[in-house]
Amino acid sequence: MIGNKYLQELYEYSDEDTSLNQLLELLKSKDKKFIDSLYKAIDLDICNHKEIKYLTVISALIDYYLQIYGFEVPGWLRDEKLSFSKPYYHSRRISDFDKIKLQYTNSAPLRTRNVYFDLDGIKRV
Image (cartoon, rainbow, N blue to C red; front, side, top):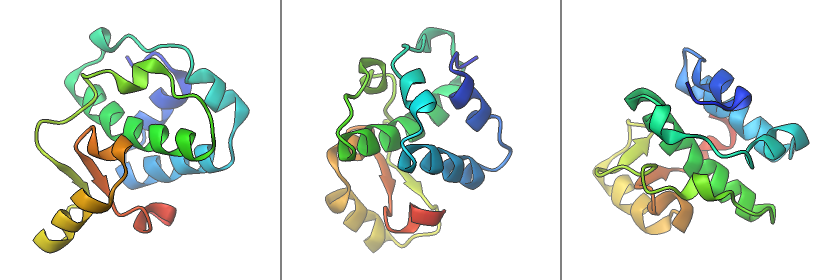
């Protein structure tokens, strides 16, 4: 159980792309209730492996967009549990060259977690 109503609902989507789209809508619209909900820490110790994987992916995007919009980033989003040991690429259908390129062009909130997105490509996943 993730412990945040918004993030739990996003996690429960059957399709990751749809979930990411909804997350981006909330972030880009600066939805006050959603952003305020992020400041209540999530107990990562009670999350299962799949939830941690999902939270790792979205925490990178949340951290990135909160910084872009000038919001303080909640401490739990930067917990060391929310990072991958091997690179995670979205989408999986990218060339080796593009993977290397993303490692150099993605911002710190993504690189720190070993999560790589084509940020132009996710404007509308």
